[in-house]
Image (cartoon, rainbow over all chains, first blue to last red; front, top):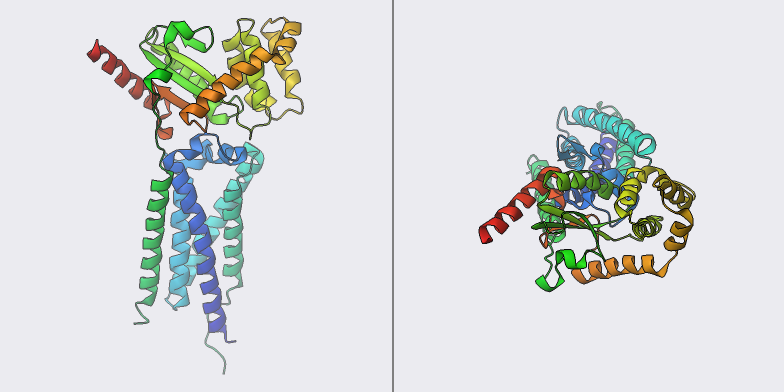
Length: 145
Length: 223
């Protein structure tokens, strides 16, 4: 398999994986907008995390930023798969930022809130997977014959 | 065509996300409950069997279904107490127990509050349980802590221990749970102001103030 084909395959996988993150973050955004995260009724740990002050930034649900970020990953990975210039570099930057935010959120769950929400852990797993995929993408160079 | 394909794919995913998000929002949007007049809290006449904070004759009733182990209930308890003071004598709080099965010690905490209530100190125990929620929720034996809170409040400890296991305390909780079932209340805190449920996003100090003001205005315009 040529380098360019490997790149296309990995960008396509990243785009597909990001859709799972997008679905998760969209679900959490809707939960926050309906106020479901401000009441108890489901998993106590999820409500402790999603109902905390850390789950909103300036009143906006953090999950909404997550949705935008995953949509950004999907878009950039799609464009990169179609060999659009700079899409790959922007994707790497976005995934790096998401990776750092994910580390911070895991720290908050583990050491501040002492509770884990499975939807947040799923999102963290998706981000780690995306980071792995982005690292695995070989640098672009002309294919050898 | 290939040049435009990524734009088409990205646009389709954007539309699908917005569409499914909107559908999910419609499905999950809270359907606010209303208490029928025959099930409404009638004030002084029922004061002996329910827990009322504030003026029992207040024109506005805030009825809350709460769980002592629920963190949002603990947050709400602080500002609801402030609102009762702020609106005195126009607002009364009626507290109903709705211990959720997902919370390990919620039922025992409700029993502790009822046992304190049998010695006339319901609200003191209510406040301590919410204030210390983070401590007893994670304890191995919450019951020991409830006993220590009873001692701190100056209750007769032997009587408190008997009352916690009593049929009377159990029945009070079950009666509140039956009311929750009959009204369709499933989560906590669920708040009604003059028999109209308050939307989850409005359960903030300012959101509740707006609802209380509107209820007061409605009462005064009817008078």
